[in-house]
Each structure stands twice: as C-alpha cells, then as structure tokens.
Length: 458
Image 1 (cartoon, rainbow, N blue to C red):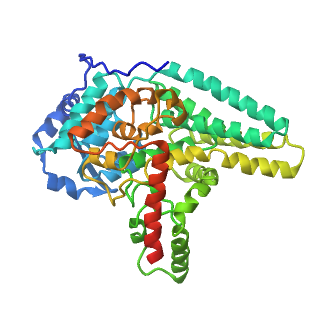
Image 2: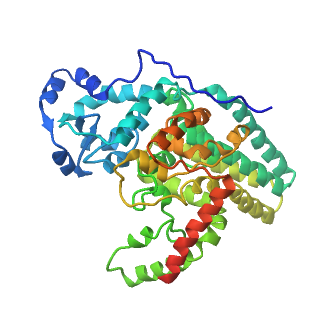
C-alpha cells in the first residue's frame, strides 16, 4: 500500500516568532534604551570583520560577539564566517523555538546599537517569511518515538554482529556492522542538530552514546558540520569539501596553494596533482578508508578543540568504543582472521560516506562566504528522489536542500517541508535539483572527472 500523501498544516498561534530586534530591545532595559539611540552604519559594521574584532548584525541589531566566540554553542567559526555582515538568515536557520529564546536571553549584553535602515534582498525577505511559516507549521517539533523502531533495529544489528563474529562469519558480520554504523551515524547527525529531543541535555547524552558505539567524536562532528552548513561548498571555508591531496572538488582547490613553496611542498603538490588526475576513479575506493580519518580527527579534536559535551565524558565514550571493538575482534581464533575482520568491518560503511559526498561533489563550489544564504544553500546541495518507504535508509540525506535551508527540521519532517520549500525556491528562480540516487553518483563522477582533466593539463 502506498503511504498517504504528505500534507502541511499551518496554524498561526500567539507563540509565532517575534522580531528578534523587538524582543532584545525590550529585554535590554536601560542598555536597550541606550542601544536604541545608537545607529551603526553598514560600512562601520564591515570594518569589524576579524576574529579579534567580530561584529555581526541580526534583524537590524548590531552585536559585538568577539568575547563570545569561545563559548558560542554553535562553535566559534560560525561567528567568524559572518563577522562584519548581516547574519540574520543563518541565525534564523540555527535558532528556532527554544534556542532562539536562549539567544534572546543572552545576546542583549553584546548589543552595540541599531543598524541603519537598509533594503534587504528578495531572497532574504522571502526566507525570513518562510522561517516563520516553517515554525508555524510545527516542522521543528522533534518526535522521540520516531526513533524507537530504529533503536530496536540497531540493537538487533549489534547483537547479530557479535553472534556472527563468534561464529567466524566474517563477511556477514561486516555487513551487519556496516549497516549498524551507517544507521547510527544518521542518529548522530540528527542529535548533532538537536533534532531528536527538545532537551539539550538529552541530546548531549545521546550524542555520547552514539560516540561510544560509532567511534566518531560527537564534538568534532558538530563543530565541523556546523561550519559546513554555514559556508556550504566554500572552497576555502567548508571543512567538508577539503580532501586534498586526494580529491579536489573544484579547480579552486588548486588556487589555495601558498606562493613561495619550499621544494618539499612543491613535491607534495606535484604528487597531489597526479592523485587528483584519477580522482573520478579513486573517490569510491577511498571511501573504504574514510573511517580511519575520522578516528584521527576525533582524537585530535578532543585534545585541541572546544568540546560540546564534557571532555572526559567524550574521551570515555571513545575509549569504550575501542574497547568493545577490540574485544569483538578477539573473538576470532586466529590473527589473520582478526586482521581481515578489522579491515572488512572498517570498509563496510562506505555507502554512508558515498551518501554524504554525492550531495555536494557535483554542485557549485565558490570561494569565501556567499552573501545570499538561500542561493548558497540551494546551489551547494542536491536531493535525490526515493519512495517514502525508503526514507529511513538514506537518513534524510536525500532531502539535503531542505536540510541545509533549515538544519533544525527533524528528518521525519523533511518530506513535509519539501512541499513548502520546493515551490519557495521555484518562485525565487533557484533550481531545486533532485536526480535519482544513481544519477547523483554519476553527476559526482562527471564533476570529479572535469576537475581531473584540468589537473592533467597542469
């Protein structure tokens, strides 16, 4: 039986989003009254565009967030990306409902003044209206019960993996652990966006559980992924399109090499050019080794970066992961079997990484931070079509456009949100690109091939 057609019901309630400007001024007391008299020009705002001098504008209010960078819940990079600019659209994307209330309570202390009047673009105007529509439609509301069948499925996969390893069924065990890690990663993706539970504490606890069984640091992922959303497919800012020396998603990656390189750096650049020349053939085989990269990055992030949960709690979660993984491998009677199991299991979730990269590899790559939030998100991503009954398998990644426009929409509402956002983009004259899954893979191949041919030409 075909699933019922999705519909979106919009209910206007008294709690519909209010202007951030009006709320913060009211909460600022005498400081708010003082700030309401100070006018800040857009030229003045643009001068404060460095990490040590970081101002942003949100809905007509200017804030000095220099000192807040280190403790900003979404990470310091998001504030630096939009330093000296109007950050209203990314703010609305990241701060629906409860998180907006928390921001309203904190932001007045950073207020500098009121921005001088300026006509905003049609895209920005329509996006701000759509943000209110999305919230009024209840599309931000999490549904923890959605995950109960998924938790049961993950538990069954994990138990099956142990049973198969103990029975020396290495190939089958690799399939079950690959499915386990792939679906668990989607849960981690959801919890990183605070889409599973309304409570931050509950999301953080689940994030640690995911780390304990996935092995990829929750804080590392959140920091990288938030930056990725803010500057999607930026050749020099988006950390999730940086794959040199193996992969270059655009010829722009060739331009970011430093002048006056040392002989060793030139040698490495030459090696990279040769590797990139064959990237359209190598990109899928490279996915079999992606897990090792995440281990290194997660541990490095734990040691050096800001963490979104307790530092020792996250380390304990990662050590628990390696403990059970080693214990599982040692169930096999011989060392050759142990080695084969480790290699095969770590290659088994390559489809997860494929699902991730094909949403961006074929799309526009541009340098820097783009001024139009809506256009940047839409042309930097693609969807792929699939029936509703298969949504669980792709974990919501096939609604990448919707997810990037409003990253706090839970995955179970993404199909509903497409009913609003597809015509929204069409009305703005922006492409809503949605090939098939295999069509997206082919587009990635062709895109990487074009860059590879440029690398061969030198």
